Length: 228
Image 1 (cartoon, one colour):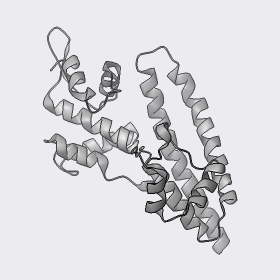
Image 2 (cartoon, one colour; image 1 turned 135 degrees about the vertical axis):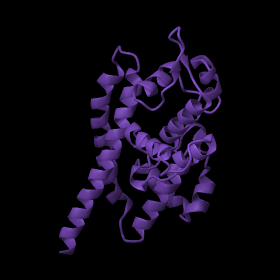
Image 3 (cartoon, helix red, strand yellow; image 1 turned 90 degrees about the vertical axis):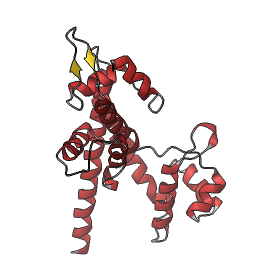
Image 4 (tube, one colour; image 1 turned 30 degrees about the horizontal axis):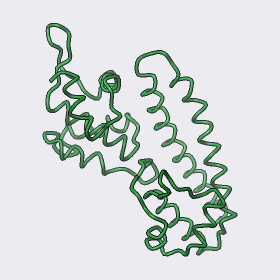
């Protein structure tokens, strides 16, 4: 298949994918299409399956390419399941990731009533989180699945006596980290080279995963000090 044909196949599930993105993934060694004598890329069905794997892992799990590449290599060597079928590849892309590095947007449309029902909190608690800037609706006034997880975590902390006003410190810290990541990634995204935005997005994924790991270790060390 030509790169245009591959793009047409992927667009239905990944509307934001571009030819530039496919070329970028090739340059990073995620796929290795053959070259026709004329120099044009020729993609096999296996190449398309691998692209679906990569795009799914990025979209659903927000995994850095380095991690995705390791998973593909494990599949190729037989350690992570067979790479012969696209379905198995996609299944692998959606699993086998530590919660601490799972940055995938859950999407979905969760109404306020459904959010309250699923989390077991009352309306006042949801309002309190919103007023504190910890919880916000998306387009159309709906929440998403990430909001469900946030409310569940906040409610669990409340059971230990952690009030909403205490959680603002987490929000301030998260905003500062996001601002730092933006400062690093923005110049790359504005670059004139081909694939500049893709490189910036990849950098954001890597830094985000590392920041969560660092934060987790710092909290663990501090808690150990408290217990000791």
